Image 1: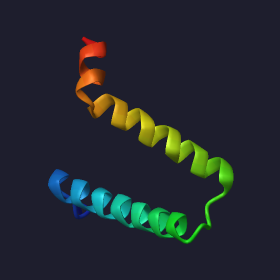
Image 2: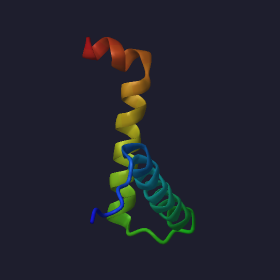
Image 3: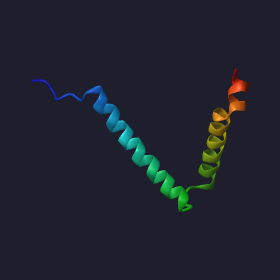
Image 4: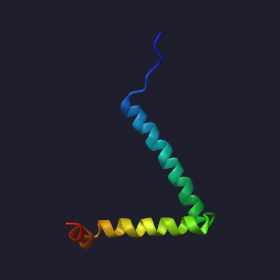
Length: 63
């Protein structure tokens, strides 16, 4: 007897759905001010890094 299998595409959809729900919870907690200050600092640092990577100057600096 073989166990039912999940296709790769379905596994990716499931993982994205879980990730999206976690991100939504984090965003709601952040908007309500329920995140710990150290977590808020980490998120701000990551956002700054992402903006720097997306800016044209960031692309030229990396090249």
